[in-house]
Amino acid sequence: MPETPNLIHLAIPAFIILLLLEVVISALVKRETYEAKDTFSSLAMGIGNVLIGLVGKALVLGTFMLVWQFRLLELDPRQAWVWVLLFFAEDFSYYLFHRTAHSSRWFWASHVVHHSSQKYNLGTALRQTWTGNLSGGFVFWLWLPLLGFHPLMIMTMQSISLLYQFWIHTELIGKFPRPIEFIFNTPSHHRVHHGSDIKYLDKNHAGILIIWDRMFGTFQEEEEHPTYGLTRNIQTFNPLRIAFHEWIDMLRDVVRPGLSLRQRLGYLFHAPGWSHDGSRKTTEQLRAELEAGPQKDVHQTATH
Ligand SMILES: [Zn+2]
Ligand SMILES: [Zn+2]
Image 1 (cartoon, rainbow, N blue to C red):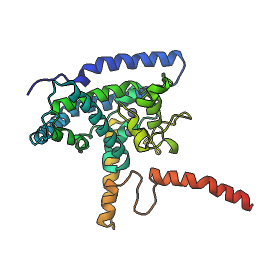
Image 2 (cartoon, protein in one colour):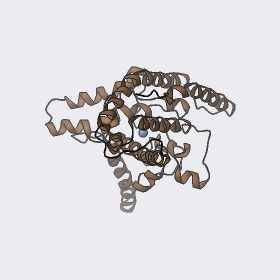
Image 3 (cartoon, rainbow, N blue to C red):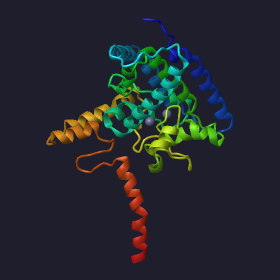
Image 4 (cartoon, rainbow, N blue to C red):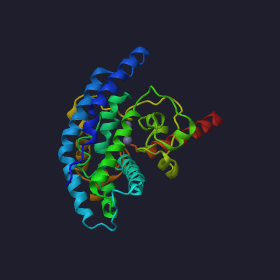
């Protein structure tokens, strides 16, 4: 198997330099963008992700190679159009993965890590899951080796997407000219994605291209300043708790006494916030309440 450089490992010095630069600029413009404890726990999550990635990536590569044996087409990596096609196919797979990571608790249990900071900065970009590959997040890319893209091409494109997504985690860049904001995922679009405000929940799942959100109805423009973090924040800087809290909560729900099998599966695969007795709320339920809210107010004002 040919040795390909790990782009993420190569980029680590650039991550650190840019992060330090953002710390300095934020201090100069007197923005409270960074909080030491929060940044250190983000860095710990990033380091853990890289270390566990050594095993996780082998698992993904092995699975991709297995599927690639049954490929439908011969796609030659020396042809430029194959890479162009892969760029779009990978970015679409990322969109599907990321949207599901927000709408099914099994995948959310890993992805919640990335949303657990109440700060939005380049450090938050490094706050990555430890369990993503191990819990099967890569299934969303499996159609690519089946189609005939070589597994190492796919993994290179995944790294390019991840590198792209680093720099958009900043408040120091406002909005780009319209055509750029229309096509690409930008700091503005991704700030919305990290917002815990009901209007911003589960929006802008893009990797590199924002067009998928525009096409499939999950786009939201940045309007008010987002409130970063989760709807219920976890109040911890402990990397182990950040990595596993949702897995533990989920398993606790699944083994609760007196539930039907269907309800147990619901706790595993339904949207985050789903509950068998309506004691918690999903994004859809929160949004429905918000929409119903003003009408109730109008009614109340009318009757009083
Ligand atoms: Zn997300
Ligand atoms: Zn992010």
